[in-house]
Length: 342
Image (tube, rainbow, N blue to C red; front, side):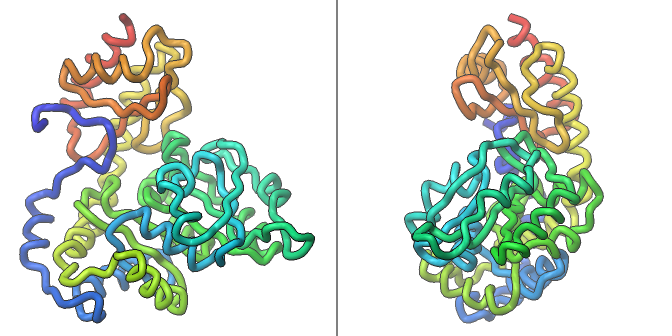
């Protein structure tokens, strides 16, 4: 596997030597008691970056998302999001199973969200309908090809939420990419949302960890929800140290991944398979009109040492990250374009 060029996801990275050193020397304590100094420092740092009062370290992004949703939406009430959102696509029905949350979706449009259409979907209390309590958006949008929701759109969604007196959540697993791509300060993004989840493993290179971000009151409640979901951790500073290292060393370098993705996109564009414009580190492939399907592409590429993600029968994806250097991108371009050429 070490010799393969892995373009399936930015979650496949391995900790750098500096990150491993930070983990090995981390000051630790019992986080369930709130006594792990490295976890506490990470939580304070992330909360400050996003302009919120507090944050909570969680093992996974799915857990962070589901904790946030339970903070905002009581059982039997409704969440609105798009049909391709991670919270309803890749989290195994957790909102319903754990939170008793009903969800309703608008058609998947990636980062091209229409605030007026979202506003029209909101159901108020009364009339024997399930009331809407929160709206969730994804920044950047995974199945939307790493698209970045424009700041003006997010501001309009905030107005929509305020007018309807509902909450606004951001699945910010790759919000660091949006920050680097558009230059929007993290605190500006953070100020638009009641809660956020942010991931340290996608692109930033940490082996484990996401955080829920919000008000002090909400995060205090989040600790109980995390424990109920089995997310209480003990000497978690070993893991939090990797996150702190990633924030210090791996955010600005995301621009390199964006440039590598742009190279891949430029190479495959002549074959008519590029699904959307590429803004960050995800390169989505639509093989509807291609001679081969996604499984065939992935199988042929693997045989030549390149791993490609299969998202559907005719949908594939290439993802750049810190473990893929320029030479690897060049090799991947050679392999993938040769396969597409037939």
